Length: 110
Image 1: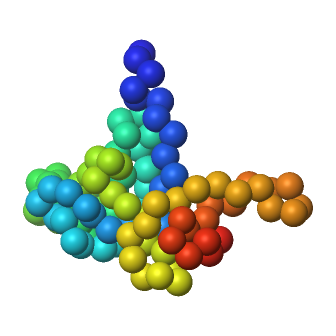
Image 2: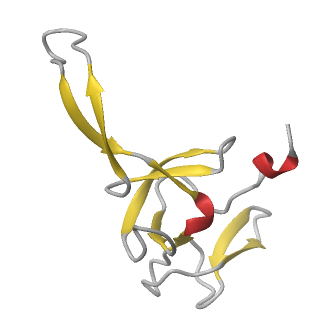
């Protein structure tokens, strides 16, 4: 396995992100989950794909369902709650010795 698949990301589950490149550029959504081995994220309402599903039970009938596809993490930027803009992030060590992400524009803890 190469090192490029082990890239650490500053985007976490539950963050609001904006797509900065590609077909969905400018759209915002909440991160549903991260696929770290593939360097991809699934964002709510972005990259919708259709899947043909076989019936599994009477509660889950067969049909074509629409769900979110994954998008490369390099095409996403974290949105600061205070600035309400896509920003770069950094890490600070807080007084209680915990590490926290912060906005590089307004220095707000994310």
